[in-house]
Amino acid sequence: MTEMTQYNKQNRLDEKAISILSHYFLNKHGDRFDLQFHGIKDNTPDTDGFLRLRKPKEGSQMQGDYLNKVVFFQLKGQEEPLNPYYPNYRAKRDFLEFCKDINLPTILFVVSGVNKEKEENIRIHWYHFSETNVQILDEFNGEKSKSIKIPNLVLLKAGERDLVDPFYLHVENITRKNQFLDLPSQIFTLAVDSKDLILKVAAIIYLLGRVSKADIKKIRSFLKITEGKMNDIINELSRVDLLYKNQDVVIFRAIETEINKQDVGNLIVEAIVKKIDIDALIKLFPEQNRKKNIYGNLGKVASPLVNKHFHKDIQEIIKNV
Image 1 (cartoon, rainbow, N blue to C red):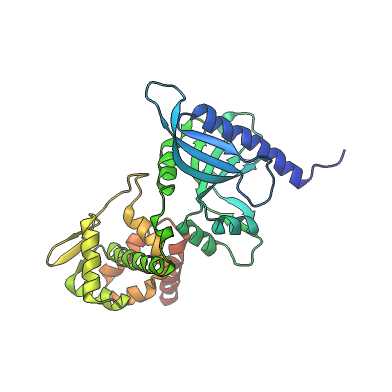
Image 2 (cartoon, rainbow, N blue to C red):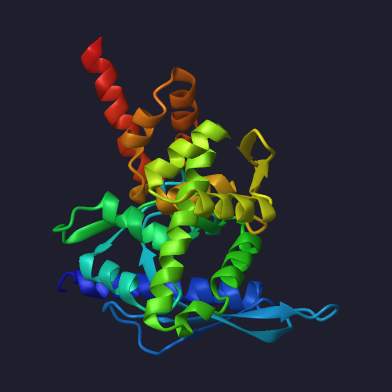
């Protein structure tokens, strides 16, 4: 008997993963999801199917109205359970490039422990190829590596533990129609630039925690923007309750997202940190208490995108001892 090839082995794992994922979405949560596979499951970088949201009907078990909210997905089966403390998945480079480039909201599902007899050993994780996550992947993996590691997969189900509610809300959020896509390219570019500038201002204020009039002037110079533009951004951020401001100070409010109770400031920093020169920001605010605030708030962002700043600072401390 010939030994099973790696290709056939992965196909068998994927077949079991299909059964597990189908049971989860269609049998356990069929009132909230409709899962459809395209057809034959293969190992090429392509979507394997789509997941459509449903709105549950009150008083009707396992029934729901279809919503016009759809995400596509890739499914991978893995023999052993993922590390519960640091779940990550290794994939080929072409798989990553496909998921980065596809113009559809795409979720990766990893069903691990598929060969285990006990259900509590089976885990379902998911990963959304958002703009921030793609930045993390580029930072985390070398440009020429044929194999890439996808870190920080999000748990969906493990044994009796079921985190379907935050996943449903996340899919509901990412499937909102993007009205900017219909804009002319020139207006779209302006919208993106404006978004990045607002994120930079918000992120810097978040890192500092509390800024005075003199600090705002420094930040304006740092970002090379006019006083009027700076005032407009601060007023808008205040209008949506991200900032508290009076005549003397501006303070970033501690606010969590409605979807999964994540710190909004953390998400803003994670989204824009690659476009802010943190070292230059430290030089702009060299006082010990300001540096403490910056690094303290950076430390709350669980992302590889900020780790290099801590590493550099620690190395500098060691060198000067």
